[in-house]
Image 1 (tube, rainbow, N blue to C red):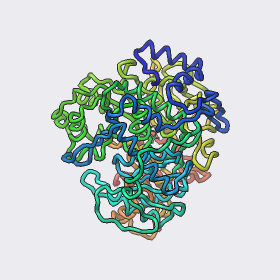
Image 2 (cartoon, helix red, strand yellow):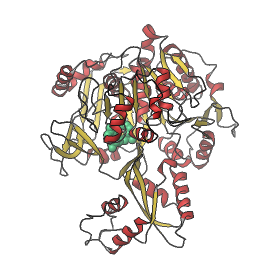
Image 3 (cartoon, helix red, strand yellow):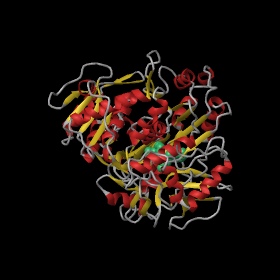
Image 4 (cartoon, protein in one colour):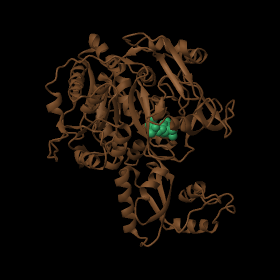
Length: 633
Ligand code: WT7
């Protein structure tokens, strides 16, 4: 197993070592895995290409390390503990042996459909065990999985399937989420009508058993394809740098990009970070509430915990169903030891009152984690006091889809914690703050742009099908550094606080959204001439979506607003629906025609005392109109 840091001195010692001799440090950690053939070089890199390789020529299979290696000493231990949407339905336990057999059956099933190493398989599924099994089955045979969050629209699904040129879509019939019953297969059918020409089969897992439309040419039932397969399937020999998965995420321009992670480095880093950040101990029950449709679910529900031989819980439902006590009821019921969730969930549950957590015994909780967005002080203290009873350290973990694993975080019981601070870099991670020109800011008590100056094993390798985009977005802003897109500050003792995005990306309930993407969706409405989208502070969501819309020939009323929301829902999904829409006759623009988003952000945030110099605008008059208009939104 990878090293588990014991105390502060140990952290300091291995951090220093990881900076002084990164290759030596990671070599030793990597040797704790099972390699079919050993790697002959630890790392080869240039951020110019970028061209980054870890554990060169090493051959392995991540599922062999997630499952097979544990069969000697933990075959009967629960690998995945599944808690259903309805609290009166029974939880399911899948042991490591059962997981092995299920993954192999599914892998054999995929093979029978002609899926081969390198083929892409898209998942559009609720949080059922078959999602984790399917993902692992792909990794078993070397197929590349791309999980699409099941809240995205048919259009968004089709866009991703087309970009990945996926061969198979795996979905469920329906998805029970809270009180809703979502017709998942219908969405897939619609996506198949819009695009998805590369798809040969849709594999449907029977989840609720309700009736679905069926197309005999492409649709197949999971149980028909998988259930009669054998429970042995050789783990494909994968090169360290073979693709493991693609995960689409939003950027400041254009359509979402497919972030590519590869086998070896991702395997090492998710295991190493999981064991250290959560201080997982034998027998612990670990629960991350994320959806596997996001990177958090990939790294810290599926791969990291299983690599570490942990018991990882998967929850099908939502925090407020059947009531606002559900999370805490589950913590009590399964005696959860590590609990990992998002600030938006904490804020939402905090707003429902202390009586909910007070009803349940939360004494099993040893570590609390947060991820996805900055946590505000009030929520931090509530989490600390009402959930952790002041006894469970909070790990405020900063990372990104692109980083593959947690980069900056306290280590529970090892380093100190400070509200709203992600604090300290993980071993092997070298964060720096730079100014707008890329000069590295030295010392403490500084604020700047967050960059990483040395490669780490689980960093993205490319954006699928468009390597230039990867270069431009992450490696062109500053020479020889990975640019995160975040602004951050360091306190007097050097703890890092990540403030938020400095690009045109907003973070709504921990979901990352490109403003351009939402604008493009709004512009699909035939009566919209132009739009501009910005984020504004939102009590529960962190950031809300504020849309300025220019239209002619249309009544600027609530019905029009509803139509706009419908278009966004259709193009992207309900998570991208603007919270506020303001109709306007113009947008503040520079003489070169660029929208001055800074002004729009201030107006949306009701912070108009200091708008800066607006005299250089092409249309300075529009600013007052916008301020007046905002009062009525
Ligand atoms: C962006 C990445 C990686 C997990 C889920 C989100 C923001 C993430 C924190 C944190 C402040 C955070 C950043 C980052 N973010 N964690 N602890 N404190 N901000 O992944 O969708 O790739 O979004 O989320 O702005 O760049 P993602």
